[in-house]
Amino acid sequence: MPTLMVDFIISLDGYGAGEGWPGFWGMEGPEYLGWLDEQEEHTALLGATTYRLMSGFATEMPDELAPMTAQPKIVFSSTLEKPLSWANTELVDTDPVAAVRALKQDHPRSLRTVGSLTLTRALLGAGLVDRFRVVVFPVITGVTGRDRVFDHYPDIRLEMVDTRTFDGRLQLLEYVPTLL
Image (tube, rainbow, N blue to C red; front, side, top):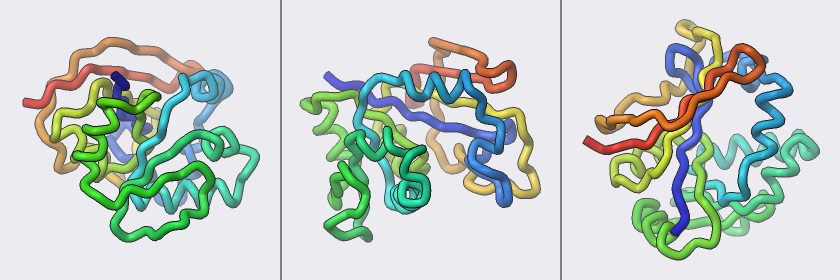
């Protein structure tokens, strides 16, 4: 049975991005980027907002996002329409919780979210998430921060199962979540 991993990158104060900051807050390093390239094959799950953002990046930077373009992706949206422009992307316009529950029964690959705060919140609330992984970047974006990652999430207990430091400054924290 495939597992579902939620993946986030966040600032120390819990934001997913900061106005005027570059991607990864300009702090990605070779060790972290190498680790990203080594991740197991999986199907990426995205909401419409993340899909629009990432497919735009893929158009602007095709070489940098070639691995993600090649991987299978499922986007959950009632506002997008077929055909989708980003290669290897399937559109699901039905209830994402029910669709992911079915995917977890018979999908051939592991599943992993990419950003998608609303989608992730719904999947956590339904108890479908097997692992919760956060990479904390050592920045505070209190004034410019946007996309607070954990607002409106259900209460969840986290059991730490892995931790790692990349490039002497980025901290990976991996947990098994239990919905309370």
